[in-house]
Length: 265
Length: 330
Image (cartoon, rainbow over all chains, first blue to last red; front, side):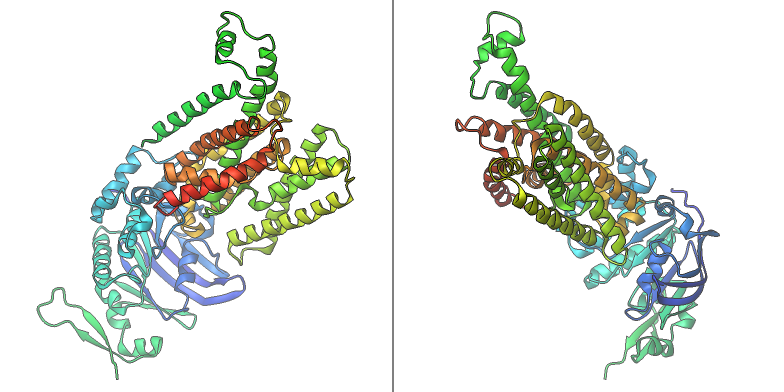
């Protein structure tokens, strides 16, 4: 079993954005390892900005973002990549790399500057292909896979990074219904291995299925809470401007959870 | 095929071709004479040592060095720019080197002066392109800005080159400039190679060492960073190495087009995109290709055809053939 360091992110009065263009203001929140946090909000609300700030791509305009009490800016890419792995939406690459090669990219943070992955790295990569049940794709070309398969490969790559925290950027967008559910199932099983997860999603249902914390981004501000209490019909109406009703799943579906049903006139 | 097998086959092909090339040329050398000379048995033509050591050998080494180096620089740039359509002159190194050489010819500098000014022109063009892209800033896509800066510098150097040609004496200097720009291996001496080969190696070795990181870059800058790659340092290193290689090559051979674009392509169809094998294999294939073309250029007609012309004439159909043949995306 991988020994994963404990992890905690703190945003302290952080203004986030690009240069002088502020997207999110006065963000104060804590994200802990070992739990799932869902990030929701309308298009353009700043989900990507928040991610880029955590990953150190965008320095905060003011305030602080800390990882285990130390400012994110003081970590090198390599150090940060040992704490946080990023799962972007799968996209094509200009060159036809094999799936196993793509997964091995996850070892970069653990290699010396002039090294390539060795046998041990390969074993880690293969075990993660097994975990996601895509070992049979190992020798296929990444660019020839379906969107769902590519997404699983990118998740395997992130696991191969052996971090204690994963950031997912709308992992189910562009996937068919079955693959969406498969990916959510995988994320849930990761939670059970005490890996911390921050996931942007367009579906409030994902928060009901997975998360112990929710962050709602809207109009430049962030609101946090637990999904059952925070995600109400009123909040969703306010955030997305549409009518939604929230129900409990019928008796017999275990575990019980809430579901979100849009009202269509 | 395993990587080591590909490299071994490439090396054997290159070695065989080099030996065959020794006996090709205006002054034909019989294989039996070569054998007699190398193994010091029996008699051989008295002119043979001079022709081999002073003419053929430098020429063969030059062809391998030029073809290999341009190809490895092209392969690295294609990886770094994440674009298979990129060639080593993308940041203006060739245009700058051409301008430098033309200026040196205009000023009637000796051959070493032409080489130095050409090298300096190539490196300066890249430095200017990179600083333009830095001054434009981070608000735009870093790769797009780099490519555009390279285009700006290339076209500026092109305009200045036209001006140099315009004022050059049409009886002797203009033809010399035109001939230099066509590219040729015929003027390269062993002394040139002693200087240039260490510079090329100083560029190639770091590229081979960081080749695996180039793979990771193919998913884009942000993803590569999140995987722990220092993309800034990596990009600077690739630009420095590739510019050193290309500028030093162009300074001795003139402008030899196509090799740096098509050889990495064809190599990728054989080896796949992993730069760890792609870079050394590109060097070998580039060396083989240019040696073949050079053999043609000095044996097809009694007048030597400038190699820059032949690479394009042979390269174009060669490339079309490979593009048609490859089913995979590249």
